Image 1 (cartoon, rainbow, N blue to C red):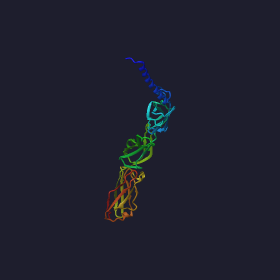
Image 2: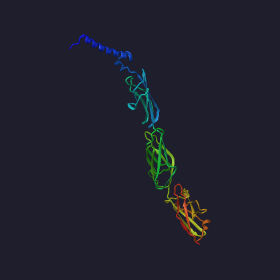
Image 3: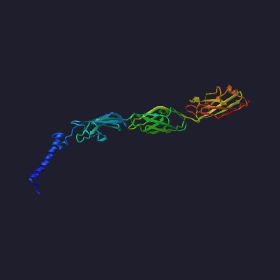
Image 4: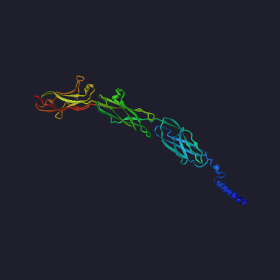
Length: 352
């Protein structure tokens, strides 16, 4: 089938008309540029970056901010990736030419960070210059949080509670805390020390001191690549106390010449005043303190024998009636290294 000239002309005219309409529309929207050239005529951009704070502790929050400016016209759209070397730290979409992201940073050192603008259909991609972020280990503060001073009987269990804190915004520390006697105590760690792993800055551990005495304790957080170590030097005093038992007897029961003797036993230890003990003994008869026989210091005359206190030549005792029975008790007050104790009632019947 053949087309005559008239038909061909009509067909070419229609095609020309379409082309002319397209050219007119292009002129209205962008001047002489064709659709093909408009797709590659993108505006140049300039990306800048800022970091706040520029010096931060490991595990704290840091804000990366970027701004993308267009060299030609219109605001750049798209995304910005913040990168260290080839590692993307976060990616955010531009809003009004700006964006930012907030992240926790981990890793010690100085890091050069760049902001990479992705570009879009109308704007060219661009990369910022370097901005530097310095990350340091976070300082810590270690404490023993038990109530001030502690007491425990010899061989018993005592639990220390510790905390390790860090500056605001930093993750609560995780790591090992060693609780032990201060260096001057020179006591074996296996018996007097313990260690704990703190989680969220808290931990606890237990000791079983085998011998009496007042022991000063320290607690040391050993630190790690994220948090610096720290020591609670206190010291925290733990009084390791002997159990004691007290008995009373009348070494003389003659009316008018009565002598009472209290014996305090403390696991064989010399707890008398001449050995540093500070506990005292008080006597009472039928629940009434014996005048002149309260807060008597202990003596240990045989050095290693019993600890004793004596109440004698006392007007109250010597005034007790013969053949009458009285209940006598002795109370040991205790001291920082010895537990208080009270004797059983001793029945005293003065003889004529």
